[in-house]
Length: 189
Image (tube, rainbow, N blue to C red; front, top):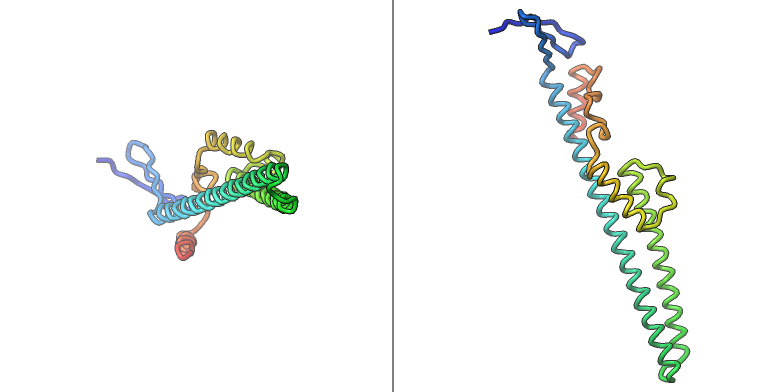
């Protein structure tokens, strides 16, 4: 069995050396627990933002589909009334009314599509960190393809480094009391 002699480095890192000169480094358990708690919080935040983004994208897609359906219905009504007017079965007032309804549906569809496009752009910018200039001129279909490509390259969730963890930088240069206070304050959110 090896025996160890040690000293404290930086107040938080313990270095032990055995009789053969091998070094063993230890950190306090409170540091590991604080790091684990911060990682769990980052993962929870990432899941929440992903679900919110997915929900927003789904709602926007549904709104676009509904508005397109309204436009198609109005177009069908206009076409039906045009044939009826030519055959003398409908009045031109009904046709004008249907045309006005069609224009309103088209305008509404354009507004909803624009809103959905802006939502998708913001989603891609915030979720994947893509500069606004890259997505600003893309249409809805191009954005869908672009997002699928980002998912394929980056993956569905950002890595530890993107969440602010990974290298342990979040707990460096903190006393055990400061780490405990940070962990306690984050657990009350």
